[in-house]
Length: 312
Figure 1 (spheres, rainbow, N blue to C red):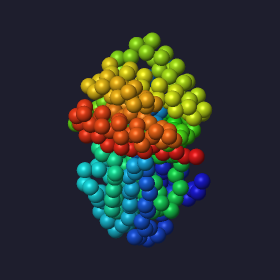
Figure 2: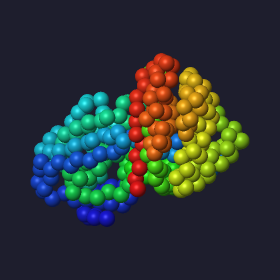
Figure 3: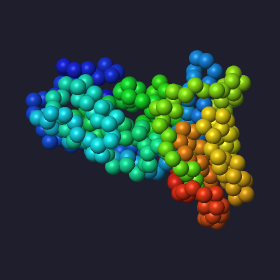
Figure 4: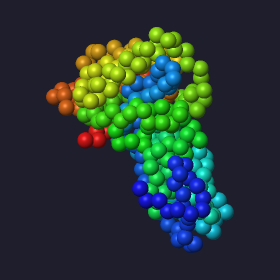
């Protein structure tokens, strides 16, 4: 890792000293992918607590940051991306960079749906600022920054990961999965993830033990690239989440998945989406997708298609 030492501090003991005028007009650009909810999310027995397992999808946020040492602050476009602006301000202060700059965020992820739009905004922003300042920051340092702002998904990592989203800590890198198609049903509305994560979890000790078993199962399934087992765990997680944030169409979407021979159902546990998981290497993939879209369209709500990311 490249570390420039001098005045100013940054989480993880990285420090930086800007060269006078050295960042004038410098621009950094970076991206972060989103997720389709989670393969698994719940609460483990103490002391572990909350966790999730990511389901990365091929939709991205792009952030561009231009440094203006003579500026009076940070401007962000769109203006409502205030968390990203706060992150830039924190990074500039930590690196001892005077002035401000312009942050532009272009996202293909809908907000408030459970697709990690806010996490992707923040991760892409952190990387763009570091690129503009010509410094490298580690994922752990970015976690430290994001943990000061809000609960965050594990989109820092090019893999399926188990992640403590409330403490913003990596639990484990599980690996990569073959590509899947997701036929999604959006039940409408939006969810405030920060508010959602303040809700007291109603899970019993028995539920927590089941979540631990499910985490063991998904860990083994990802390692074995076993999509049928991945789908089974994801479906069970969606079912258990009904006591926390129920999806009114879950029974109907599960029935669609059974009827078309899908792998299972994935939920945006803190969002508004449910998705039917289909293996893209299935010889009948096109027919199954068409049948799933038709069946899901009959349920009401907006239907969309997504592709999961494979990191091999």
